[in-house]
Image 1 (cartoon, rainbow, N blue to C red):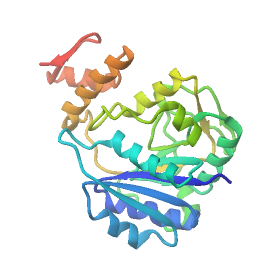
Image 2: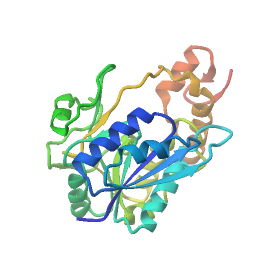
Image 3: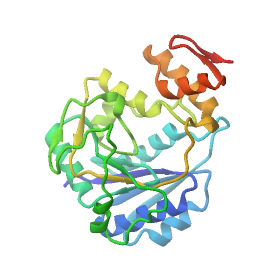
Image 4: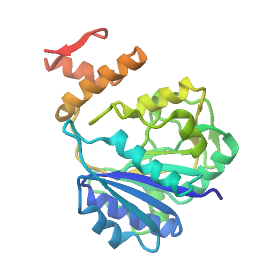
Length: 273
């Protein structure tokens, strides 16, 4: 099997991270992991308590005046993994769990596909649901997001829509990472960097493949819809995406902001109200 590293970016969400580490210690006790802690000194203690026998490196980085530098932090984590001779990197959000066999399915897909963005189905856990102590019970919570493909376990669905790329549960080889060039670090704060990465891969002719069996489980946390607390970052990042690609991302949120009078957006022009 390829040398696989998991990369997680964390700021807060200590309980979510503890569950992630605990279940990885059961499913893949010899897996390697890089946790990039953004302005959060408590992350190291969570890792130390719940890592099991796993090799988990913690990288402490500062925040950014405009918000969490998620793209930059992911790049930091992946570069660290590649420096440790990673062949395959799995991107996993701090609030996500990996199902049993997910790393194996990603490794098999990487060997079969060549350069590709590999994405696994994601199930969203309902409010109040506590992750089970065992992996087999985790399967009972499986309810993949209906807007994303859900190939059968062991199957690969090629030629996916790059707009659907999610870094919350994805994988790619060192070769693919080199070809895409990493996340654009001009994105700061919430929104846009994943779609940009998907489009950068598409521009390089790199396929997006959905991997059956590489399941992720998203732990519940409160969200707002639309996410008005991230208004400034979403507007800034949407404009950056438009400058780079000539199209608007996150249109649903931009429309919702416009309906509330928070911005002007008519599908062509975006500006503050």
